[in-house]
Length: 224
Ligand SMILES: C[S@@+](CC[C@H](N)C(=O)[O-])C[C@H]1O[C@@H](n2cnc3c(N)ncnc32)[C@H](O)[C@@H]1O
Image (cartoon, rainbow, N blue to C red):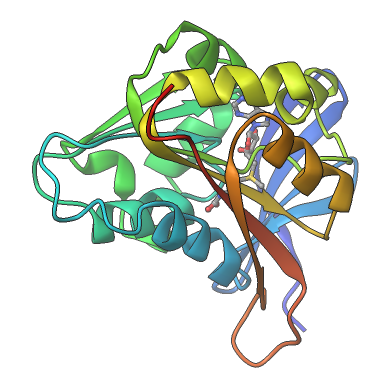
């Protein structure tokens, strides 16, 4: 068995975020618990594929993604969007951005090198709050889901006021995609409550494994 080798470490309020490698497998752990593994990214990609459905045919599309992680959602969005699309990625941890420009770059085909991408270090909540009808899709994968927080401030993204801010940040008919490690019926209700029409998808984390992760796609009303 190849041992894990530490490649990088970031101090975050909850502890140390550690990037490690074992052969061609990469993992990011917080206080020893695995947050991301390069072998499991199907649902992260589907977040983009489902969230950006129907956008390839449109010109001047704008998509907001939070956070960057290992870049799989960003890569999948780039692959389904047109050449004139713009993607803004909000990532809280500067070291994660640096890792994506360094040891992780090849994993998802270097999405940060694509001229359609702008990456902003900071809280995605701030990007959502300042946007007014600016985005055709917002793709949110910053945490384990609506009820499990690796960053304490993230709870506000999944509550009613946070969902209302996301709806306001979207253009009429825009799509909010939210990733979660598990189902959360109360969250589905909150999305509907603020005016989204909601589809829920269950997606295997990797090929051949049982369905587990959940992606919600909420479509904002066509008329605000
Ligand atoms: C599970 S990972 C995202 C995985 C990503 N979808 C992919 O395809 O690799 C979550 C990321 O969100 C970042 N993050 C957490 N809270 C955030 C916030 N409030 N704003 C922006 N980024 C945040 C974390 O640092 C981490 O990089």
